[in-house]
Image (cartoon, rainbow, N blue to C red):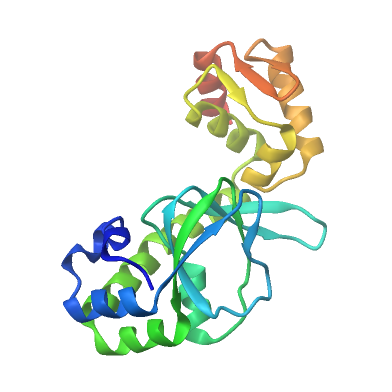
Length: 219
């Protein structure tokens, strides 16, 4: 069971019917997930649908060669469209979801989730809206990986961090943009050589944002 106070953390439920709220209180399960734990592995069946109450979750895919690519992240109040697809289709989960921090979630039984899609306009609209938003995000990732040069994607990634000091490893960047650590290290060395950045263990210092922005225009 879940208390109504916990459910108030999910803003989209503010306009939900009383029947949905009552059913959530009765059937949903509250759970804490430790940092670095997987919520779902590729190939898992989806017996529950999760809403994130707090923390950060990364959803990613892993190639046969071991290369990772981040599809999207989930923050407080959000949920995973791949899980919704898994629940509705009864197919296995097609990716990995990892707790990047300690995470609190509410779990809804998949049977209940599917029942609500059929019975409640509110719930059906929520699922379709989630699908639209996440599909756009995933298509954007596919476009970047398939058609953008790696050096351009890396420079955009550095600029988007909006910080002079970026605490991150080369391997973590590779996972974010879908390439190998060796490629990232080579491009970063080139950027350091021309004075755009400086490198130290686990840290990238952006020396000249304007130079990075100028490089993007030329790529």
